[in-house]
Figure 1 (cartoon, rainbow, N blue to C red):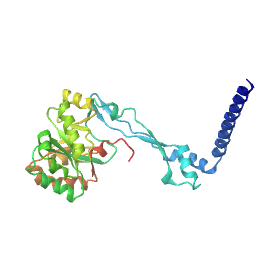
Figure 2: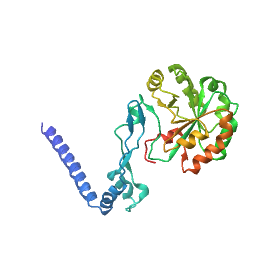
Figure 3: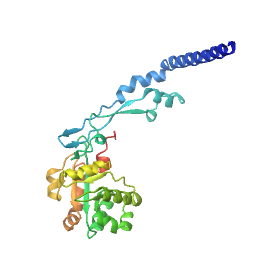
Figure 4: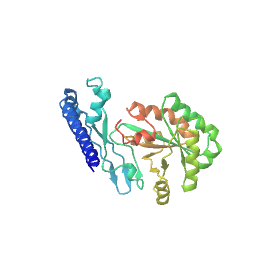
Length: 276
């Protein structure tokens, strides 16, 4: 019995010692000038989230905010014992409505607070595809290719050599075609195929896409150069068809968008809720 009391007593002393040591370390660190500096400037680094715009079955993504994680930042900087902007570590502050929780809604625009736009090229054949892609490559711009299920299966080797994002498009999305096409896309490209393209609202289509954890996107601009010229704004999702008209206009379209100060980005970046 005395042995048991001795073991329990020793264990209690060790626990108290660890607790006391931890408290001492905490008090010391709290009084460290470096930690105080981190705390003092942390408010300047804080960014509040931009809330998403939700209207019925439509959503326009907002963006995450961020706040300094004081403890992790302090541990990162403590070795050099000097404040360094590059070592600041953040925690995210999320908006009330996030895309991940609203896959049953149609995404109709990118974040309206950023001057980014995205171009979707709908592809059923390769008649003009080379010429159109060449214009994007020449200007170092990204285009999002939404290809038909048949085109994807018949042009795997061709698509493997394209350095743009690839997704599958269908008028009638099904679980099987999405599963097969997404596996092919992951195998031949670096694209994470998480977007379904809807030309119009499609109740069955959005159910299928949300079931397989995909987002449904409806373009905000459908048409050529004149439509873009009259309707371009922050967050625009522009739909172009792979045809002769697009081939003739694409250089002017890209140049016009850039001349207005917009960045042509991938859908991933346009719809990202991360602080960029």
